[in-house]
Image 1: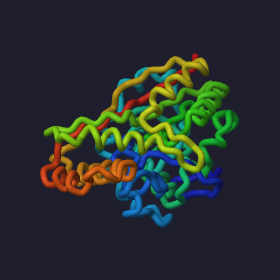
Image 2 (image 1 turned 120 degrees about the vertical axis):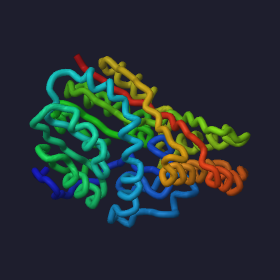
Image 3 (image 1 turned 180 degrees about the vertical axis):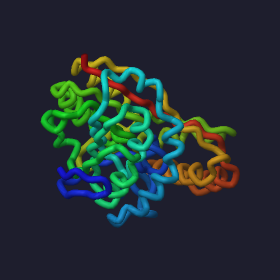
Length: 303
């Protein structure tokens, strides 16, 4: 691993998190974090070619909503001084830009992602005074030795892409290393739209079923991720605190709200092709609704 600020190194691919249109909740749309293809009929519309351009544009669009949604009060519960942070599935580094100014001085961030272009952006975009190293590492290969110097493990919108077994293994690694973990913006599956449309609940149910799909033999957690993480870390001996962290979208954020709707509806339509997705989406885009898009933040601390 190379000490950098704005440079990257190579390694093994990472299962990545936070970039799906539809929000961390949705897991749908053009591309996942680092260009990973994610859910939905919309997923083929704009797939990153590895340059990071499409996913970076989406991450930039959603970064203000992410920042506003995260549960700030969980930071008051962090034990001790946080100097070294390992960010899993860092994307363009938006979590680092939000979190690092809220921690103490002398921070070093180890950022991991599958996309070299996004790693470059993440390293270059961190605040002055924060040192950064980058690594391409699959979260399934994370070991206690990787966390030997870490004071905190964190990620944004990653857990819904994992399986129950993978989350249990991650909890075991953190437990052995005695490192606290902060997982932000994990999908809950709850979407509230105003004004109401009679088809809202059907699209919500279809979307959530899509997020629990089997990919290459792996049953994704999707909306079950926050509860699965809380259970796994509790069994591993952690004190777990969970907070809601919903997105608040609507006409005041037209570009983000429209892109989220396209991804959310596209994923639902892939799961249920019988749904009148075209007509529904056209109605919703013509008069953007106010939307509460459910997520939860999970903090696990080992005493």
